[in-house]
Amino acid sequence: MFSKHVTKDISAYCQGELSSEESKVFAEHIISCVKCRTKFEEIKLGIKLAEQLPRLSAPDSLWQEVDALLGKEPAPVSTVSWPRRMAIAAAVLLAVSIGAVWLYNSRKPSGWQVTRLGGAPRIGSETISASGSLAIGEWLETDANSRALIAVGSIGNVEIDENTRVRLLATQPTEHRLELARGKMSARIWAPPRLFFVDTPSAVAADLGCEYTLEVNDHGAGRLSVTSGWVALQSKERESIVPAGASCETELGKGPGTPYFDDSTPEFKNALRDFDKAPGNGTGALASILSQSRPRDTLTLYHLLPRVNEEDRMHVYEKMAGLVPPPDGVTCEGVLKLDQKMLQQWRSSLETVWGPGGKGLPKNMKEWKLLKKGGDPKFFGKDGAK
Amino acid sequence: MERRAVMAEQLINGQVIEACQQGDRDAFHSLFVAYRDKVFSIAVYSSGGDRSVAEDVTQQIFVKLFTAIRQFRGDSEFTTWLYRLVVNACMDERRRRRRLLPWGTTETTVAMSNVSDRKPQERQYARLEISEAVRNAIAELKPKFRLPILLKYIEGLSYEEIAEVMGCSKGTVASRLNRGHSQLAKRLSHLNNPALWGD
Image (cartoon, rainbow over all chains, first blue to last red; front, side, top):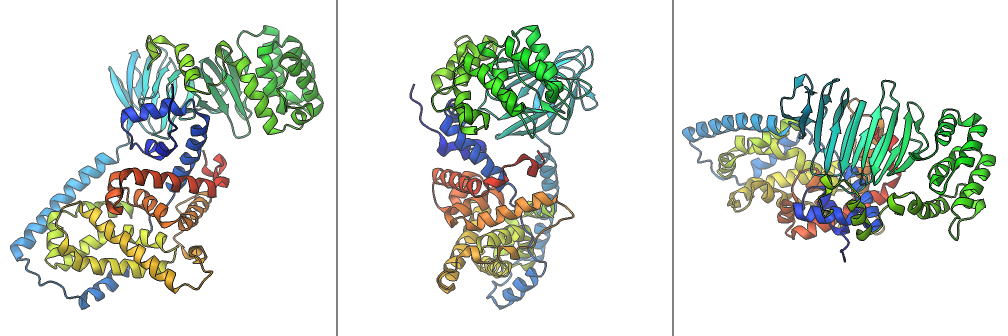
């Protein structure tokens, strides 16, 4: 189906100036259009920058100067009588009260709806009876017997498991962000990529249109498992792309580890765990990873390329090229030098091997709708529509 | 400071405006307190960061407002009417200064570095740097892209209100803001670094 580009509407979308129908059309288009998504990231940065523009303070001396100049102006003769002045004073007093109430209400942060699924989840120190509202900065906490469901604005929902602690950090048209301090949550998100984020102590999960579970233990280490679509797990130095059917572990101080498919062999997973723990001494582990690799496991091998030394990189490249030959224009020399353009080109062709049902990240509306239909029918509807 | 200004703005109702129209200096002072920072901010950013020019423009605006307010009939919101006055005054000043500036002198050479509203005790150094870079980049935008950004981020107006102030359609406002945001992002792409923002 033909769908017009939406670049001209990006600012209006981000600033809540589109109708809900227009927003839906926008979101559906942008999730499948690389061109509009690139522009979307650029405009988001522009908005973030413009928000830093401070309001300046006029100098205190300005009134004296204005007042002096007003003295020279042919001011209208004041016909305001004393009773009228009193009325104005009363009106001002009333406005102060109304203004104070308005200010108090308008400064209350907007929040997300929380529904109790069992037990007695708490927002701050208050227990939720049936439902409640989670404001920015507030913690939602469940104990060993309680669970809750958070509606993430209009873009999806997050199920909070037992013994979990989450906090709402931001809810804006350009960014929805939760912090998962410990426990387990399952997210189902319908939104353009990189609008919904979850901060954990060791990495940030950036949604690329998907369903996933995220766990954090008491030591700040975590594990991401994706059941539909794609998720990016990021730290300052690293990013791991995790498709449906794959998982990735994270560790405090190290960031995201190397992603792997859940159906890979136990030997493969154990070797990868050993390698991630001590990549400098991982030659034996690497040999085991390479020997156990299937074409799909190029997901793991691709992420290992920048994480191994140059000598080992050659072995990884050779194994990958044997499993899924690189496309034209991608050379061994370029990959060994970690040429970003070539790596991106190879990744694009590998994504079709990694993606659910042999599909890569959706590149057009048709592919996106197919991805939707592969999702949970309870979430997407019987016909795949939201 | 900002909270006080917001409170003061809440006080401006029909009766205060009516009193201003009658020449009541006390009422006019209330009006001045409510809007001085917003008007001054727009004047600073529109004059390439020159505070002394901005002070002159702000004075002129309020002096003009004192007499022109009698013509306000309440057909639109008072703020819309006021910002139209402000935008026109800033555009007039810019045209006047362009005539006076010698060839080869551009607005960007007018010292943005004169803006010294830094409050290091209140903000992180990195945020200050970002804020200053944004001010400079805003000063370099064409007025048709800069003014909607100022009305949006300094005054907090909606697209519809900006359209009314600028006398154009809402679609034009959306388009100009889009281009303004895009140009800001391109000029300041080096600031797209989470470490700088403390993300």
